[in-house]
Length: 278
Image 1 (tube, helix red, strand yellow):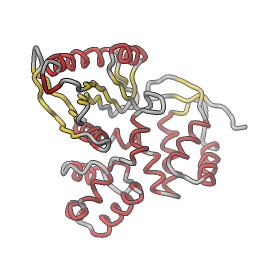
Image 2 (image 1 turned 120 degrees about the vertical axis):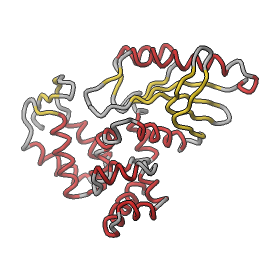
Image 3 (image 1 turned 180 degrees about the horizontal axis):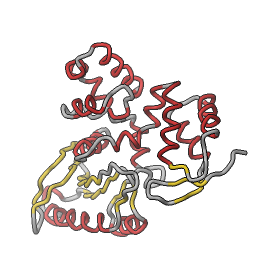
Image 4 (image 1 turned 90 degrees about the horizontal axis):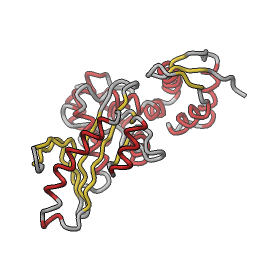
């Protein structure tokens, strides 16, 4: 029986630490049972009441990285997405790629005329049966949440556009959906409003078992910010060339070599990307 501790979340809220959640997150990284147990045993010696969840993450990441860099990369997914900023534009492309992987034709940063005014839509996704408009709420602070004002405002914008589309002959039989995607979480009021209004909300772990985390892991679409061998400057240079996913690096290896300008480094980064995509 492991000892119990109160931990401090990014919001400042205190809660009971869950060893089971830690075990699950380590297992999702692909770490072997032996490595999972070794990491947890080592962390037990460093735990104390009031420790921040951020420090817990850093300890686990460091211990994993010493043994398996690919497992550490997978474990760092939430933190890696927060490193995609600060503008949020790479996050919009990232969400677009997730939809593209599900068979949608995707456009990022589209202006659409509504009944009342013109709107900029972060991501527009279409297939023969469905059109989805997505608003992306990116945060680089774990303590930031999206409250009920976010879906209230966004739903009114989407409805202004849908009101035009529903009257068009070409749209007959087409399903329209509005999504709000964030890399953190929604307040309870925001979630309740989304369910009531028919607005799909996707947070880091919301809806349960179908949040952003699961979407990424199930599709194996890891952002390049998970790669442990890249500096922030190198990561930004790659993203500036629209290389957002690990699989993007593998699809354009010559570009990676040009940007990194170091054969050994480029080969190491590509090898890590290959392992993450496998």
